[in-house]
Length: 302
Picture 1 (cartoon, rainbow, N blue to C red):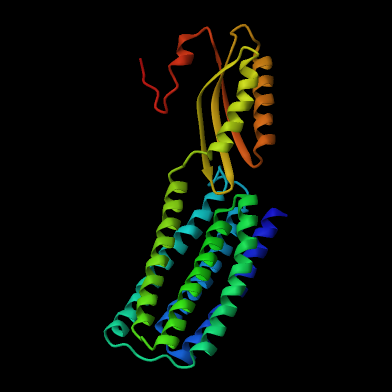
Picture 2: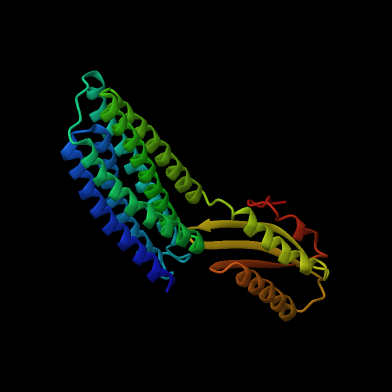
């Protein structure tokens, strides 16, 4: 059901991108404003990003197989990475169109009519972005959150263009139009860099968010009161999937069955607290000094 919901939102994003792209380019054609062109150009990026996002969430839903034993959840980072790169390309195209107008300003035709089309597109993106961001946070979907942030950036772009074009219409200072377009390009670049950073952190196996780590620590603390100890606690994110691993230190006289049962109990508690988590445990006796020499990622041979 969750994956069905993600795919539904991506289809809605594709439909919204097609509609907003059409109405914003109509606004640009009516006015000739490079500010409105910058707004319309970002809608093209929205469409491509939504298509890539649909592919990413579809691939992420595939179960683990022999070649991908840990699943396909990291595929969502392809979506945010592609989206970030496309945003930077869109910013360059906007700058390419705006700089000549900065040197040779031109009047804007039918400004108010053109703006009405752009505002309609922004309203569509704003409403869809709000729902996508809420669902993306709920399901911890990198793709949905990246697409939602991009839609909100598109709304802010439209607001900036709206102010700029209105000022041009009221003051006849035509140079404001390319200036607004360049400011929009700068804002788009900032959004793209943030998405690329998010992608990089995911590909570098960044640890779970602090609130998730605190839940793991709270669960382990309850078992520490029973005389158990834990070390080598590690975690990482792979799209929506969480991975947690740690060593469980128990009395050496415990049977293998008792130690295994305890590990199963701890793993279940973590999975219940953090759904879609894969938990790995390693059982060690507390009487053996070697148990405390394998804390680092790369164990030193002695």
